[in-house]
Image 1 (cartoon, one colour):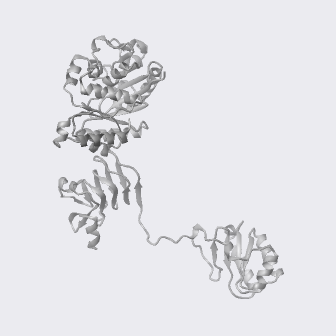
Image 2: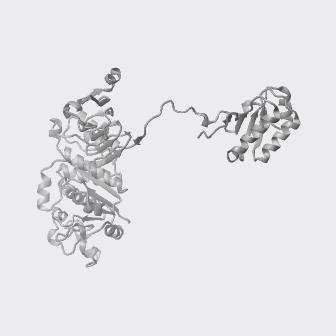
Length: 267
Length: 233
C-alpha cells in the first residue's frame, strides 16, 4: 500500500494551494482511496479550516515530530470519509520548528498508512517550501493565469528541479474564460509556453469555492460546481485516467486548441 | 606542441596505423644515422611506435633493410612498411615481410585541419533559464533555450539566445562597446551593452517575432532585424 506523496506548492501566496490540496484529497477519497492530507504551513495553518475540521484539532505536525504524540493520534478523521485523514499544522510555532529530514522521516511513516499523502506547502521559497517538498514523490505547482503568479511558478519549478523532485506538473487555478475571450487574461497556452511543464488540470474561477471555504465543505463534493468537477478530474488523472479537459464555455476553436495542448501536456 | 625540430630532421606524419617518416637525400649510412639520431632525441615519443619509412628512389638491399629494422627494434620501434619508388627496394621489403603500399596508411582523424578562425571563449547552456537563474561569464554566452523573466545573464562578451529572450541580458559588462545581444525572439527591453541601457519600450519590442540583434551605434542603443543588420556591413 505504499502511498504516493504529492506536495502542492506555488511560490506565490493565495493562488489556491490549500484549496487544491483539500479538494484533490476529497476527490480521491470519494473514489475509495485512502488519503492523508498534511498541512505543512507552520504558523499560518489553513487546511483544517477548508476541510471543516478546525474544532477537532488535538495534536499537530510539530507534536508528532517532537515526539509528544504518536502519528495516529494527530490524524483527524474527516467527517464525510472514513479513509480520509488530516494532519494539521501547528499554529503557535513557525517554520524553523521542522527540518527537511524530519519531513522525510515522517514521509516514510506515512507511506505505510495510506494510498496518497497530499502535502499543502506554504508560500515562498525558503525553509517552509523546502520542508514541504523534501518527502515528495511528485510535485504539483499551482498558478493563476496572471503574470506575477506565473513568474513565481517559474522560479518554483526551477527550485523543484534543483532539488531533484522534478519535473513538476501544473495546475492552472481560477481561469476566467470570459476574461480570456476579452483578451484580459493569459490563456493556458501562454502559460505553458513559459513554464514548459505538463499540465495536470485547469480549474475555472468559481464563486462556490469561497462559500465552500467558509463552510468547511470542499467544492469537490458539489455535483454542480465546475471547479468541483475540475478537481474530480484531476484526481482521476492522478489515478491514471486520461480525462479530457472540461468544456468551460469557450469558443469551439479555442477549446480545440486547449485540448490539443492538454494532450501534449499529458496527465 | 612543436618542440625544437632540427633543421635536417625528417618529416613525420601520423596515421592510424602508425607514423610515416619520409627520408631525405644523401648517402644511406648518413641518412640512416640521422634517422636514428632523430629517434633517439625523442625516444619517449617513438617508444612502442609502428613506423613506415619512405626511402624515395633509393635502391636498398636486404642487408640494409634488415639492419634498419633491427636498429629500430633496439629502440622499441617497429618497422612495418617500407615505401619506395624503386621496384628493387620494394621486392626486398616484401621478402622481409614489410608492407610496401602507401594505401596501407589511411588518413587519420588527427589530420583534421586546424580551425580557420581563432575564436574566443564562450559558454554554451543547453536549457531554458528559469526565473531566478543568474549566469555570469567573462566571455560570450550562448543559450539553447529561452531566458525567462527573472533570469539574468552577465557576459563579458556577447549574448546569443537561441530561443526567446524575456529576461535580463547585459553584454560587454567589462566595457566592451561592440558586444551584441542576439535572440531568435527578442521580447525583453531589460538589456544593457557595456554602460548603455535599451531605451525602447517593451510593447514595441514584443510585436516582432523574428531574429533581432541589439548593439551600440556610438552611444545609442539600437535594435534591428538580423537581416537588416547583416546588410549594414
